[in-house]
Length: 587
Image (cartoon, rainbow, N blue to C red; front, side, top):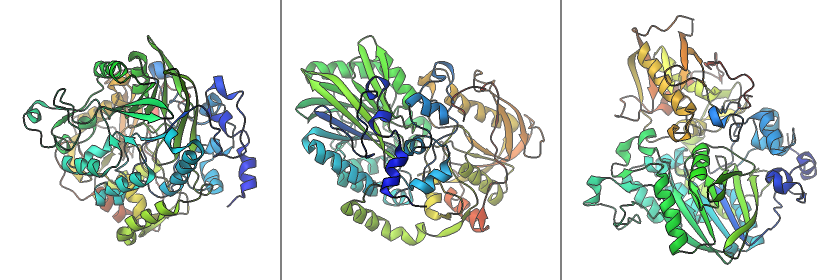
């Protein structure tokens, strides 16, 4: 189904600045007739993208129907889904914005509005904004998770995305999945990146300090043992803008430390406060922002504790937030944003900066609809060329989707279930475990599932599968540990991501309970209770410790799909949730 531009604008309804700005400002805002008419405001324009996960082409991407908030996060952004989210941000039901920001009516709306993202379409919007505001008045920031998430990124070791970001004109970036390439490859990519790579919270460990092999290439500072440049100063719109980098603090825990043996990470509130104070004292900036990959809940807590930050441009948790959260702290207030994922959005914050401080702001998180923004020819040519050597592999048709196959959500998505079923079928296991990654594109019913889609869901640098015996007690411990990572009351003990996905296993989950008491009533698919002392054959992939012996997960999933003409799930192993009735994070 296609729609005309006239119908597109009519369907937008209340679209535009009114639905994108904080409640204090959008009531009086003029409603533009074009989704991409972003009224100019102030003198500084900060653009922000994050978590594109190497998606160069337009995709379908379904937002979560479960994003539970517990404790102090209950009922607050980003833990709102569906109608609760639309109501909170004043977005009209059944509008194009409702489709962009929620899972509601996903299949029908996807066919009406088309795919989202794509660097060629993103490039057109970036160029339009820079043309309207003046290139010297804009700054484009990338929050990381850019070099990983596709087949071409894996095969080129992230270099395809470095080239794309150079062409896009990214000025500053920080990282997370970038560090899952070998450290030498990371340094090479940073060297080829035309912008600046910053991270105030990455230091050298004690052994590396004596003879750091990348001291000439990374921005290493011997005085404080920071592995990378911690911040940069940019002149934007006549104002001095300080951008401080905050890489993902749990990288060596969530990902294999063997890829980054010399570097230590961490949240490091005290170091951040010292850095903000130092920058404000020595650089005399008009604006201080943090380019973060903490995850939104961590950013919200940091904003409440660290003073002197005007805005945090956040990533990692893939939360597409239409408006910033205003966080009060002892020094004033900080705006906290998060710009979604998969190239689906561009955050645009316009600031009125006068007299050495921010006087006012306007913000829009702009959805990138590929059939409403023209493809930039230069970027599209680059994308076609970088994908060309892998075209035949990526476009192999494996099967047809019998239903919507998606990932994003706290518990099993349908594509996750396919991965778990593939592990059990191909590797002959009783139970399968798959990581709760938040990246991975969506396939609509009736659409051909290609190797490209499988790589979008599985493409990491440690893809090896395993088949091993585990006791029922060990399986419960794994579920409890990941569940605490997701639902701990203290955001600083959360590492982002979602619950480990399971196949062949059902259980009850009580998210509001404490560690060790959230998981119960574990059974096999046939209802047989899991015995704590009994051994079960478990299949899985993406081990963070030592390398597993099995084939890459994408080969296992592809083999499973090739056995069928149409792929549908037989059973979705989503846990029974207890104690979450009325939680607006459940759709």
